[in-house]
Image (cartoon, rainbow, N blue to C red; front, side, top):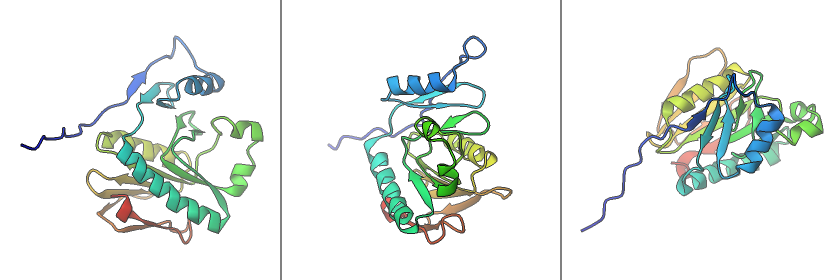
Length: 201
């Protein structure tokens, strides 16, 4: 008799409310994250702290492949800098977010003072990716994608491995939904970049 593996259910991250009792500064949030490196910690625009456990090994392996493909293009293109899932950014609305992958034009990145780049840099990437694992809430990720776009992102991909769908986000445009695409184009934002999804699914 073959043992049945448990079906992954959606897990909502833990949300801690501090305001108005405590107001955590950017510096305090950074230090808090350094003390709790085993968790993925973000801050909402309203000051709530979102805490999630690390992703599962399989999803991280897929994310590693995604970042590897992006990294090769970034090195060849030379116009920007790429980031993995551990980097945090302070968005214009005050939220601190950590996309699974991101890209920022080099001129914008280098305009940020060096000391701020060592913390959660005050910038919204032009390009962001969120990779949904089987336990991730689709609604939570969709809300994050809209937040990126509303704060200055020019292109966003929400890759839903659970349903084999991709949601493409752009400013002032309806969300585009693709069913089981084999590739994704970086369009004019990441000119020449094509993500091969065969190893991501």
